[in-house]
Image 1 (cartoon, rainbow, N blue to C red):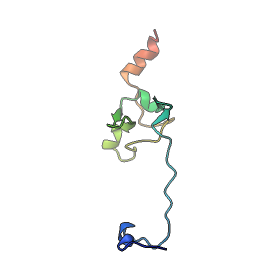
Image 2 (cartoon, helix red, strand yellow):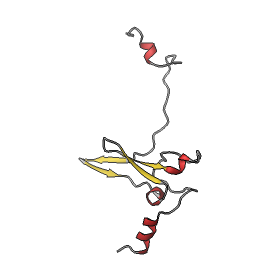
Image 3 (cartoon, one colour):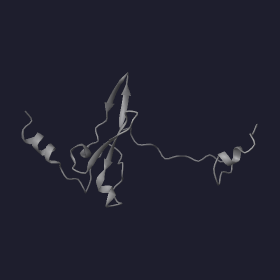
Image 4 (tube, rainbow, N blue to C red):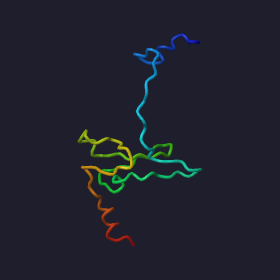
Amino acid sequence: MLEVKGQAELRGPGWRGQETSLPEPGPPAVSLIGSAVVSVPAGLCDTCVHQQVVRTTRGSSFSLCRRSREDPAYPRYPRVPVERCPGYEQSDAASRNEEDPA
């Protein structure tokens, strides 16, 4: 095997030639279909007062849980769609939409 001088340092501390496995990623926050960007529903987060949608300069968007700032039990960026959450509080806008679907 050809090894560039200093290549071992590029692998990081503790690397001993074994590969490490990464955890399976969760579903993406957005999907690309053709040239259109389609948002994936975030479940309960979409109607929660604690959700903040964070958009990147590349056009991706992520659902940030503001409750995670005070309580470390809540993930900063939860896997979506969220189906159950003990800290869920329905936003006023969501409750108005349920009362008057127009």
